[in-house]
Structures are given as C-alpha cells and as structure tokens.
Image (cartoon, rainbow, N blue to C red; front, side, top):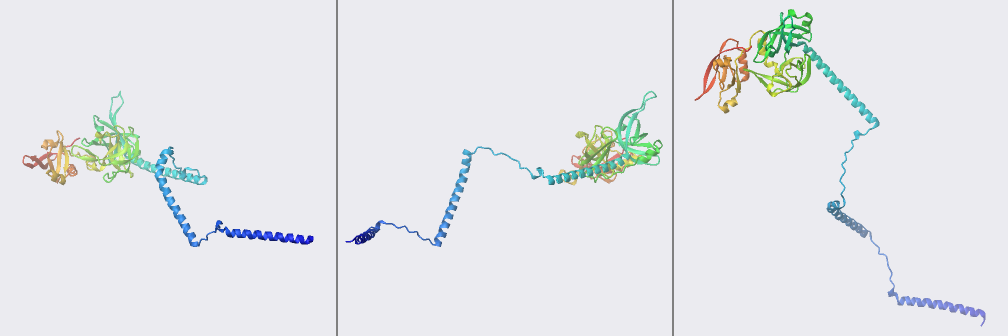
Length: 438
C-alpha cells in the first residue's frame, strides 16, 4: 500500500472516531435529560407591575404609621432615660434691635425729629400756660397781718395769705382772702404784684366760711399799679370736671409768687359749715402747710379759693379749693358791705326715697346745732325736720342754704318743720332772728 493511501486511510479513521464520539454524547444527553434544569425568565404583564407598585406603597404607609405610633409612645420614656439636658431659654432678637446702616439711620433721624417736635410742642404749651398765669397774676395779691410798733421798733408781720382782687369802684379796691388773717390782728397791708404795698382795712368777714374782704383806698395806690392790676373774672366751677387742667397761684409753697400746674383730681368732697356747705375742688398740686392761693382755669378765670384747712380731717398735702360758684351769693353781700346771714344749724337731706324707707318727712334732718346760735335760741333741736324758711320750701341742703342766704341779718323769720313725738311727727314753728358770724 502506498504512503498516500495510508495517510488517507488514517484521516478517514480519525473522522470516523470524531463522528462516533458526537453520536455517543448525543445519545448520553438523550438518555439523562431528566437530570438537567433549564431556568427560564417569567415574563410579567403591565397590570401585574402596577399591582406590585401599589402593594409596595401600601406596605410603606402601614410601616410608617406603626413607626410614628411607636416613636410617639416611646418618646417620654426615651427622653427620661437618655435626655437630661435642660432647655435653654432664649429671647428672640427683634429686627429693630439690629443696626441696618441706611434704614437705621433714617429711623434714628425720624425719631430725633419726632422727639424734637414733641418737645417743641410741649414747650409751646407751657409758654401758653405761663402767659395765662401771668395775666391771672395781675389779680393776685398778698395780704399781711401786721403789728405796729412804737417809734423804737419796726412793724412786725404776724402772718400772711394770698388774696384776689374781686372788685373796685371809684374809691376802693376790694380783695378777697382767708379770714384767718384777721385773727388777733388790727392792721393789714396788701402787696400788689410783689412790688407796691398799701394799707388795707377789713370790710367784711364771715367766720362761718372763713373768708374776708379787705378794702384798699385808691388814693394810697399809685397810678402805675392801678394800671397794672386787674379785677379777677369768676368762672363756673359747677361745670369743671375731673382731669381738667388748672393753675394754682399765690402763697401755695410758702412764698409769695408760687405758681404750679395740675389737674382737678376730684369733685366728690364737700366742706360743711354751720348752716351751709361748699363743693371742694381737689387737685394733684402740692401745697405747703398753711398755704393759700387761687385756682384758675386755662381762660384765667377763678375757679376756687385754695386753703390748707379745707379738708383738714384728711391730712391732704395737696391743694384743695372752695368752689367759687358756691360762694358767689355770699361774696356779693360782702362786697356790698352787707353781713352774711347766719342760722347756726345744719343737717342732711331727707329725700323721697329715704322718706318712704324710714317714714320720715321730706326736708332737712338737723344733725348739728351750734351753741349760742340763732337756731338754738329759737329752740331748734337735733332731729327736727326743717321744711320751710321764710316761706321758701326746703327739700334738701341746697334749698336750705339758699333760703338762709335770702334772709337779712337782724330780721325775725318763721321756720316751719316737724318734730318726732310719742305719736309720730308733729308740726312745729320757730321764730328765728337771723344773726351773722363776723
């Protein structure tokens, strides 16, 4: 056999072997196919994917709810166990406290301008009030009680008080002041505007209300002073109210030219005299012990007479003034040289309501009768009900006072009323001779 044939036979033999090997493998795979596992990917539809997302979201929400409840329930316990630091207190800083360059500078300028404007307005207001006070001071004088010595001693000043010029005529200037200046004195002098002094004479006084009127002869007053002074204008103290701005002038601080501003703080008090009463204007203005003066409104009108003993039982150290409207009737008499009528008995009003409740007649229930007074001399007693004076009906303290002021000193009048007896109240009539308390 040739060499080429041998090689050919050898190649054919190798090919047959390979073919037999593949055949054997194929048969073996067919015989053991139950031992092989093939994993195939399951194809999901779009609907199943959406449902899976929804389930995941629901699971997350449920988990979140349970987690929140757990944290909320366990928070106090956890804080008590693990957290012991105290909470630090802080105060928030306002924006306005922080400097803001241009804006802050503008605000500062505006604030300064506002403050300056307010200060200017306040100064203008004070200047205006001072102008009113200066004009009103033209009516204010100082009255001094003096004791004349002999040729070896000088005149001695015993006491002094503020006065106000309330009238004048062709012959005299009339000054109203405190009647205490009359006590144990026989000579007086008046100082006008802190400059010129002139002798004064007592014209009339009413010790019941503690007021007095002095007369100064115009011949003893220079023309310059007469041109400088003015007669005061009386205001209506009945219409003034709490909080109203007032000016106090005179001997209020222990020196002659005292001046102060304030307000009326109360009108509820009354000064009670032997047979009358007078409203009191209380203020927040300080008053020295023994101080006197006048109270004026912003029109320069006199509203009251300041005295330190007006409300002596209260221990007040503020200026209290007798309301001028309640004194006008009496002042008119005194300025005309007439004596003020005096009865010497006073009491409380019995209104309709009190009359029905207590079964007491309407009128004035007498609570106080002064010794050696016209009332006592006529037989008026504590507990009597006064209902008529000189034909004028009395229903309260105001009508009682007015009826007395209508009388004339020295005349005898009839006073009617009622007195309680064993069988109730009975009518009584008194014959009273009106006196005066000078």
